[in-house]
Image (cartoon, rainbow, N blue to C red; front, side, top):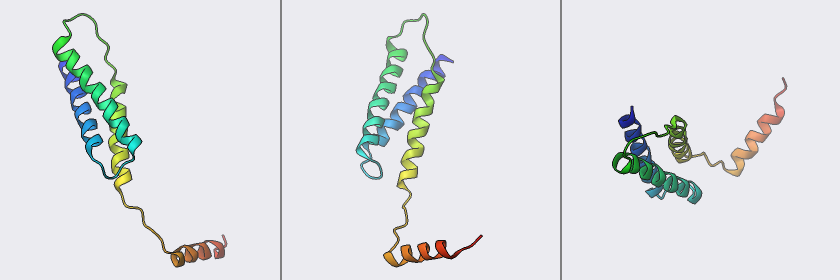
Length: 101
């Protein structure tokens, strides 16, 4: 269980640092959060793998929610949003106003 936890921490940290290095498709705040938390995850995994000498340690499975949210956020923001012309906007407003239910 310990080795799985350390491996998942390292993998999550590496993915988040990788997302932080990609310049397109995300805001500066999102990149910063990815970079900071990715470094923290990698640092804790390094500590547990190489410096920890036994005893008790805490396993936070909730910590794996953040990488999943950040990856989902990255791909959601990369989906191109349609840019409507003024004519298309006016047509949609017109259609929305004329429908009676």
